[in-house]
View 1 (cartoon, rainbow, N blue to C red):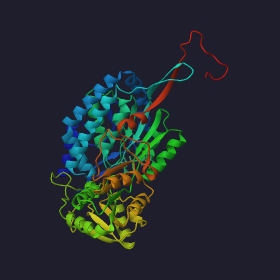
View 2 (cartoon, protein in one colour; view 1 turned 90 degrees about the vertical axis):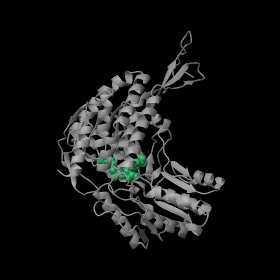
View 3 (cartoon, protein in one colour; view 1 turned 30 degrees about the vertical axis):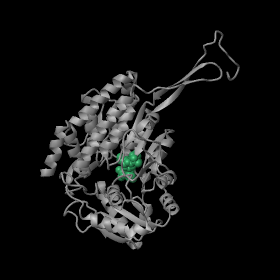
View 4 (spheres, rainbow, N blue to C red; view 1 turned 90 degrees about the horizontal axis):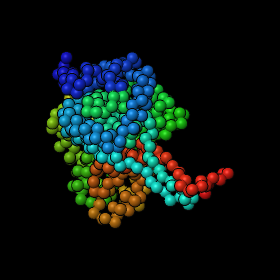
Length: 501
Ligand code: NAD
């Protein structure tokens, strides 16, 4: 065993898991029976572990067990559900170190970022645990004089699919509002990063989450994922991932007449005006595209810069590249780790090569570590907004810097993609900041900031960035449906041969 597989095995043991990824069905860790999946350490490029795909059979078992557990969970008081969720928040915090360590090892994300994401997961359970006894309907003053009230009811079992770029974060993000509102869950994390989602639910079960309420499938989309989408018990599909897979999932859900929430990719515009504090804009731009090695759905991958400061900002960015600490995700000092997997590494390389052939000057940091799927922080200069690299999600630390001349042009360019997830503006002019925020198509928009997020604030996109909303009270709406109840309090019921009005 290498030192890295030792770390893997010891952190798995610290989290109460076996030596390889296993699905968690009805409180029991079980092996799949499907094809073999290999997890590779993106820093050493060596195999960490292999495990079998959960397959359709486990997916069916997961849906069935969630259906039974959900009825009992929904029958509890909101306060009782909330109490369990506060306990989950605490256990996540007290197990933060092994959770962060194993995430860093498998996903290749710097340990410091993993710690922040684990803390955010605890915050999600605390936040939605607080909502669990505050979800109620309305009394509606209908003209017929009936007492008409609404209730917000759980959907039943929901199926959640999450990607590899922020595994425990996206898992907690979707599980917490789902169970706060009384639903059962089947969740399939990416086959490349399944472990922290299993660990999260396993820890939660030890502090009172009923076994079987949340079931985790370690496996592939076309097998385990497809079977769960089609299962009769599943009432809604929540998908976080790429637009390409989002289309496949949405079609499968539509075919089974199930609603879906799609949280997909982006090509977000980070707009810098000539009156901006350029030092702040440069730091914000680095954070927007180089943090997490650009593997963030909200990455500021198009830098739209006023022509008069374009050259200066690009120079500041390239100067700053060599200061960024690239390295082992487990190293405390590392700010940017490798790309998370070989497939994505190849995609980013292809995108940069294509940009070069489209005429871009590729301005990259000089060095990267000797091993690992590292892409150096890169600015693509000289592209136009219609070029491939300015229109396609790269999902790596690569930004296209594009000049503009007027506010109107900046807004037009920002909106000239098929995405609508996020964006930002850097300016000292308050009026302009609000005008740009109003007119850029984005579910999240930052003014003199980037990547500020909180579980209390809604998140989501439009067009190829998906539809539906996560976070905040919007997620409570996504995970419940309204029931309208009518009561006739008249001494003689008002009965009409048709509508009572
Ligand atoms: P992906 O689309 O390749 O995979 C996402 C998930 O879908 C995985 O769990 C995968 O196993 C599953 N899947 C694949 N085929 C399936 C099928 N036929 N049926 C059911 N499930 C299937 O995405 P990825 O490469 O893991 O993640 C990167 C993408 O995720 C990027 O586009 C990024 O922008 C997006 N993302 C979006 C958000 C958001 O909130 N908008 C957040 C994080 C990541």
